Length: 105
Image (cartoon, rainbow, N blue to C red; front, side, top):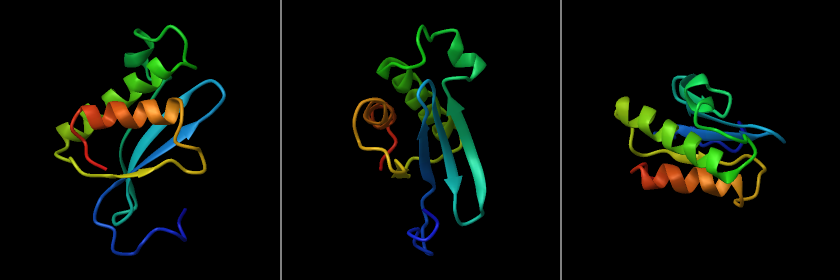
């Protein structure tokens, strides 16, 4: 991903990683080379509301959580980085939930 990243990127990047069991999302500022915020299905705050970590409902909760964290930091525009995952299922559910909370891609 590093080679395809434009040098003049002004928006932070929402990187999504999906394993067989869990889903992870982190917002990266490529300009400063720092992680702005993270959320995942193993987060203790979200584990209370999750019945099964493999569902689209869990991905929606992670998407809403990352959107709330971004709004608290004053970020409302990002770039969505789905890696090599297709835009379907849990990846799509996370992206749609993030958009519904007011974050623009």
